[in-house]
Length: 61
Image (cartoon, rainbow, N blue to C red; front, side, top):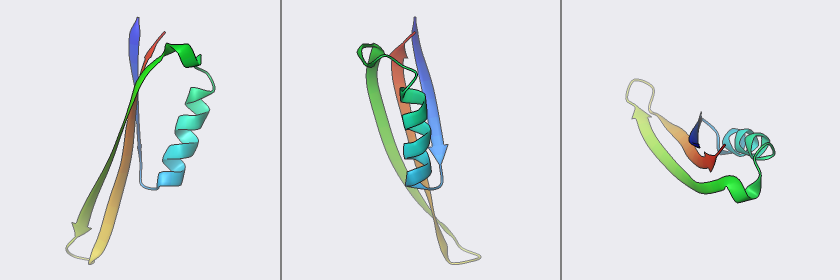
């Protein structure tokens, strides 16, 4: 069965840690694809830039 696991973090290091923990549980041959995305937004009230680092792992269970 094909499954997906989605990760969403504010910091790239947090995303890396979360994904590595999950990938340790998956046999390499069962990983089908990994998608990565970064989004940036500006908080107008606070003049602060916010980042969203996300990834999706497509794998066989």
